[in-house]
Length: 172
Image (tube, rainbow, N blue to C red; front, side, top):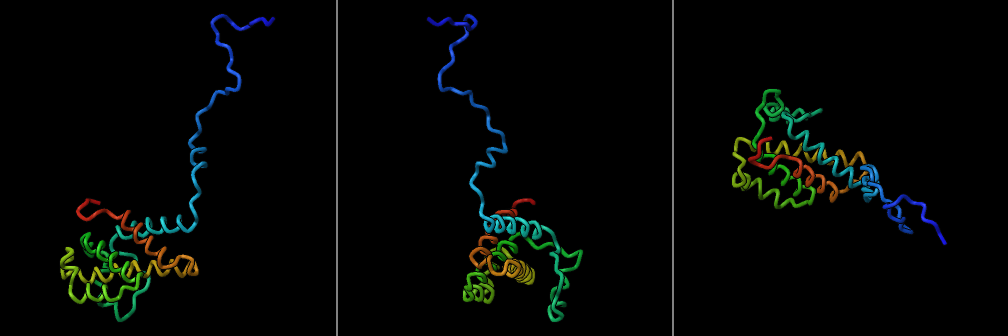
């Protein structure tokens, strides 16, 4: 015979039951699937380039002497930031350049298709400048990683830039 020494009204323990505790926020983070380094780099590069594109004028460290006169109005500290369609369309040009879709790029510029997309003719130099700036940043990333970030990964960086830039018409 067993004697129950528990206080009256107290339930008997359940065999095999251990009270669970709430996981901490760090355990939840640690339980997530690890992100491959390349994916993290691509995401971070897209975020950082979007931040730089929000600033105007864009930071340029070196300008070719022949292009200097054409770019001077865009690089002046008091230059007006182009409209959002310039950035959207510049990223379109970058995607085509990365995909080596030269015919689409040439058709777009030659036939002034940017006008149909909301980029006025006076902002054409800014469109070409922004697309070239983004492409140069991407190619420098590929060079810095000794080619580990290939053109497909660079296209994913462009997608990240698009995600982090304000949508056309949205206030930044």
